[in-house]
Length: 257
Image 1 (cartoon, rainbow, N blue to C red):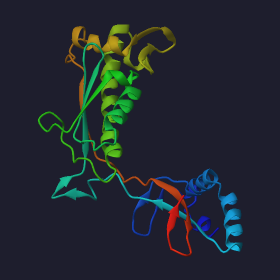
Image 2: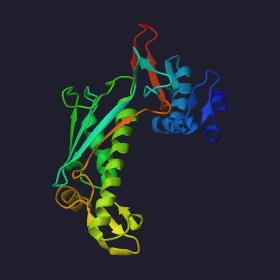
Image 3: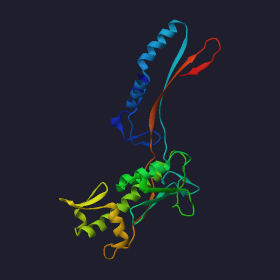
């Protein structure tokens, strides 16, 4: 109960701390309740009382946390003067296949899956159509690397913004192909349609092919973009851990369940 009283309530977000950090979002009570539900807290408490009556030792530990990650905003962080931005370069081939390059480098976290999912979602393509390249300093755009849980908040955000730049140019090409005003072109997942005429549409791969074979007059051919993302704030993930231990009174041995 004391823990619940001291949590920042969800309606107070974004919340500025006494040290000047702006917590963007959070629902700490929900995380606590879910953890207690998953572990069967009430049943564990009953077991604990029973075991205490038998002279046995059983402990239940609860820890809630929030962590500052996603370094970091250029107005706050740098390394020897280098701003902690990160980047993404996307190149769409005439076939509609996508090559995406990043300045980060995975250490087993699965960046290639996360980045591909972000780009596929933004451009309405299959994840299998997105090839991710990381960490080649001869070809990758500038980035500050992988640490401090920053890759998805910075490079992942750069991927989303870069894909949206691709989509904006693709919209102009779609308007040309569909012989419609650009403001009448509506994006649906994987295709552009003419507003009010859903049967009149072009797919993203069709637009990609036209970018190299039939671009609008005066437009530079190709479908590529680079985006450097400077995060406006850090991110503040949160959660709750629950740990149950049994202690042997005779030997002091601790067994974590």
